[in-house]
Length: 232
Image (cartoon, rainbow, N blue to C red; front, top):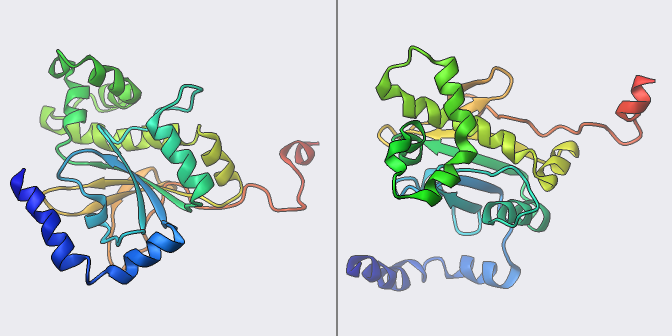
């Protein structure tokens, strides 16, 4: 811990003076982050480093398993963070990012690991659908690949949950939000992105467009008929 505290002093002495203009602008004009990233709390997954983000670029929500509970009337930290990011900060992109060697996904696929951790077990119920997909759709998968597959499927499940949030649903309908599903490989440093058109994860490459889970596209242009009118 002393080493970490020492780095605070290093920041104040070596880093802050170089970026003082940036922090002055953020302090006086506020933040306008480009995206909300919902990632795992795993200490090896650092959203700002993965995206090479500067202060003010990225609004981050981290929790065990990069989970987004379906919207409900019960207050929750993730729900409030999503709502604030969309409504108050006006982010145009939301990323749900899973990762390799995820302890939450290992526990999801092996519930005995959660003995003595009732809160973790309750939290991971929001990922039950991912476990069911792995068990029913990948019956022949090798045991060592179950957690990785669960992590990928969990990203898909949490994106589905995300769309139940009113602020997100409205932003999608207006064509103002793009949703991304990512998977970060800790050992290799690569990032897989969900392609919403094919339903597959693809490696993010320098010379290729980044796949998106759901592209920003207005559901109905102004002045065009509604669904009901078009059906008549």
